[in-house]
Image (tube, rainbow, N blue to C red):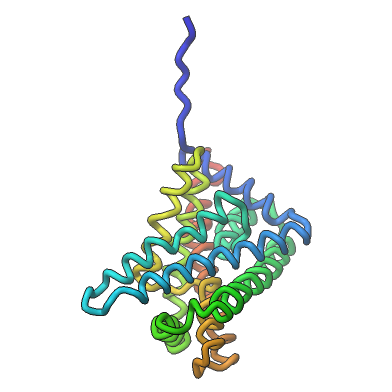
Length: 263
């Protein structure tokens, strides 16, 4: 008679801490070809998710209140799901995973900085590629959708320093948790569910994500928005810092305090 063996479909938090540390090491140890190709895909996937958000949210009449934002937020997570399940590198999830490996003394500061620079630049190229070719050239971010594209982009660049910074913190607290929960699951359905709700929440709330902004702000600029390159650059700097603080401190930092040397 065969013995029934129960295998958990998820990792316990202390196991997840060690697994995420190993993921961070793998991300930071990749060669240039690995980082550039998967970084491009990461930026492109997030941009496609945001494109879906704009099309859905922009098609719902204002009379329905927040329904458009809710439905748009519900489709946005496809971007991060493609990254975490299909393969891709995203600077905001690396801010959590690679930093956790750094806190665990498995990754050097030089490796962390190198990874952050390469993945950020590759994400930027991927996001702008989608903004121009799949948004501007096809007209999908313009026409009837441009009002939503413009309003979204202007709200990003017109935020004050503190609004942008803490919006970035809140965003990557949730994105970091989306990646954390995806790593927790051992099957694809679990990874999708674990990713979906934190990402949907940050979009519905309106928090700022640096890679999403790499798409929506250029998309508005390609359509003729009165947004300068300096405004775009300033937004990138502030939101990058906020995202880093959210992912590195509120996820990687607190879980390191809880689980390092306590397994």
